[in-house]
Image (cartoon, rainbow, N blue to C red; front, side):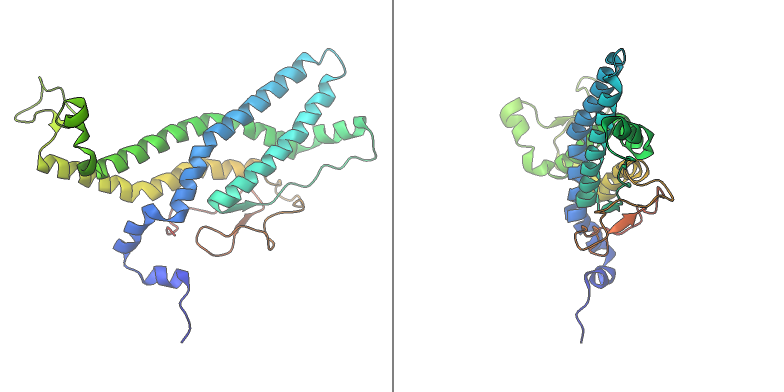
Length: 270
């Protein structure tokens, strides 16, 4: 008798059990960590890109502006490698590195020209700009949704803090002076507390899919802007060898060599 694989055990498990386990799965929490770290990372990348462009534009009156900008493009390639590694570790998305920049001969002038002609360097600098607005929105949505879902689910455990510390019977959802019918405006009675916990349970059960959906734009940016252009040979050290990070489902890593979106939210949670 052979031992069943993890995928087979998941396939044979009841759907209700899988749904209850999903909010606690490593895949969900890795995606959550990715969205949380997105904000400081995006701020740093945006600051780098804007500083580079401003400094290079200010130095264009001299010959130093062009090589400074080329050096900034080389730095953007390094930041792109960092972002590919972060996406591989937390999202299980393995994107091949773009081909290295090769100058025909030595010298600063040829090296600068090769960097300025390299499309992948420009795309990785563009990613520093485009990621910032979405990272801010995704961070706000992620923190709000997670805090709302878990706080409502655990509301019966911490409702006592309202009368003890705040001098009110519970969460205020309505102005007590204009509350309709017999509703006091506070979530305080046992049926109201149970309803709040039930709403929190529904939010928590949907949490893995919501969290995954919020990472879809980041996955697209990594695939389209940080990998090789279609038809180009991938660079060395891409994540398809022994050092590649496993996919979140425990199978082979998801390797993307062209900007084709192949992953959808229909995948099961691990």
